[in-house]
Length: 295
Ligand SMILES: Cc1ncc(C[n+]2csc(CCOP(=O)(O)OP(=O)(O)O)c2C)c(N)n1
Ligand SMILES: [Mg+2]
Image (cartoon, rainbow, N blue to C red; front, side, top):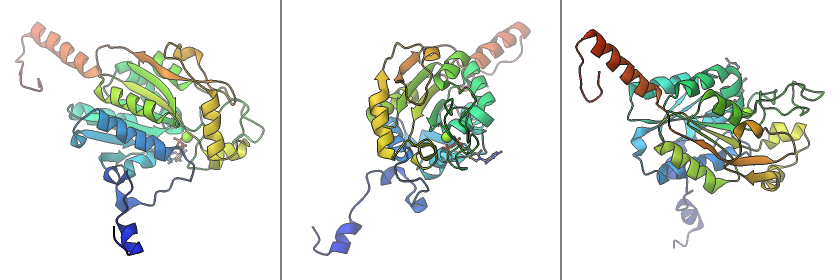
């Protein structure tokens, strides 16, 4: 142990350093934001899946959550607002050896990017989507998102929200996702397990993570500090893997039903491309190049 105090400090390393672009620190996230824990659980899950980190890519859109792509030490892409899923789809189809994760916010994925999400789920594109749901547009100052609960206050709903929110796991399930789960930023171990399962699973996987935003959402709704929010999640969370994802919408104070609700197999988009092309080729007697990648 060095005697000199500054030398001792120099020798201290944060456990996440190995997985972060330390040259980009300090990060922009507020203290008590859930994103730090979620990123830690994400990296833990990828590590547990025992895959080559060189073959894992992360794509984000714009927002506080979108910053994940800039901090994580993997091949990563910080794309335009709402367009993380089409970018990830292209990435996966062009290089099918990659495991592709989209990590983005509720506004990015379900407002401006909502159409892309439902169609990627419908096609069963082999990508993994993690949606960090803080019930608000965090980065831009707390405007209403499609997840903002009825009657909650936001900077664009000063009299309380009049709009019915989306139930994200219900939307993903209805659109055809192969894997659908919900956890909160407090469920570190469960989150990592879901990330591991998604890494290993074929098809469109969707994970909603409920995350505290003390700075804009809770402040407008008198929700208290980040710690108060986490305590609330602890009290309100119920794990029920058998719950029907259509029947577990979220509101301001009710239960947060968590679990892995769907884990099924159906042909992926690429498998359908291959079998469809094979059918056509056989029918027309065209030259069929049967290389490793088929085409
Ligand atoms: C085309 C376009 N429209 C609007 C914006 C402004 N904008 C940036 S982030 C954002 C919302 C982010 O909300 P969310 O996805 O929930 O992320 P959070 O910050 O809450 O993590 C908006 C509207 C933008 N960058 N580009
Ligand atoms: Mg948000």
